[in-house]
Image (cartoon, rainbow, N blue to C red):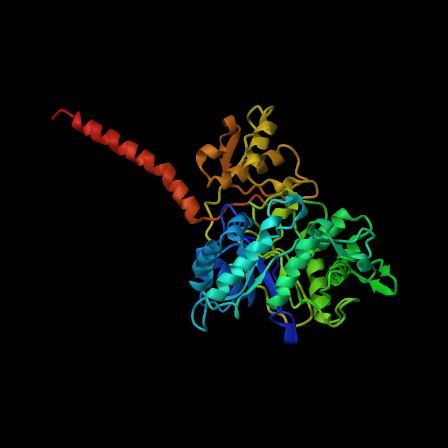
Length: 484
């Protein structure tokens, strides 16, 4: 159904030689119509992905991963941190329900390697919403794992955001943790060191490029001709090394120069902003993997690269928060339905990336604007539609930003229509909508058809069932009143 070329995403997920298992992928589930977990696990296995990082502990996801031999990082949402900080019993219950219940002791369970406490809880935009509860929650989860005799096999970590560490001058040697986090970071790193855990961190060359006028696109994409950045006698040829060594300096300044680092998130979005395209993302991923494969390390850690790297992300998620930008819903290497967005050629084999197979979609129908109607109020209807559905592709620089009026109105209408499982009343818009079986996609602007999920099926049944009951009631009433 989709024309995307697909080559060698496998290479992103499996580095050469001895580091073949050091690359994993983030699997987020913030989607209105998620690809069913068994389908996702099938996608992971068919592409030989050996490690996956989750953001929660969804039972359906863990059941699908059971017996897959994929190594898993479980996530604890930020919303649970306050409870886990204040109650060791709550931590024990969480570990029992989500770790002990599924843990593989060499059998058919889930190979759980890490429990990630929080999802970037130190993100500056959160303020003190989660910050005060992180260390206590991590300690209680650690105690619960010890009580369950799993502390030797499952490590506790805390994923830290890209803005946890800074360098006002832009020089890595001046890197330090944010002043509001300094005490917490010392506590966290002391905890991690005591339990032989790694420091999990996000590195985001895309956001660094967006926010820092001194960082060029070529520098972010590992281009050979990029302008280098110098820091004393050290030369930086790309944004990744610059950020990584800024973190290394921050760790050294508070007494932890040798702690292992895991890059918990790194990627490049493909829509929703300028320079967020599939072709640029492909260039970035190729540069990243080539750089990691080169084994050259960074100027401050020439022989101590990240011990693991998790690509962000496996699939697009249309329910991710767009507070930091519309691109947040487009980090996936695959589209929401498991189809590859771009290809790679690392010069090491020709095995193609395998797309998700036998994906079930809703009917091939779209909602577009009815050009025979008075469209003077169409823009207001489109804004209403976009308030509850995903219209991020219409953003400046997005894949649908160049379609003209009223094509952009049609895109908004269709997004709402698909979000609502193609219910006929969701393509009304005061008589301005029209259901069509002709695909209205234009060039790079794809008018999508949603996935058939248990949610969409139940919604359809919830819509139809009352009408069947009403019809039967009317029929029964007529039969009772019938005179023989």
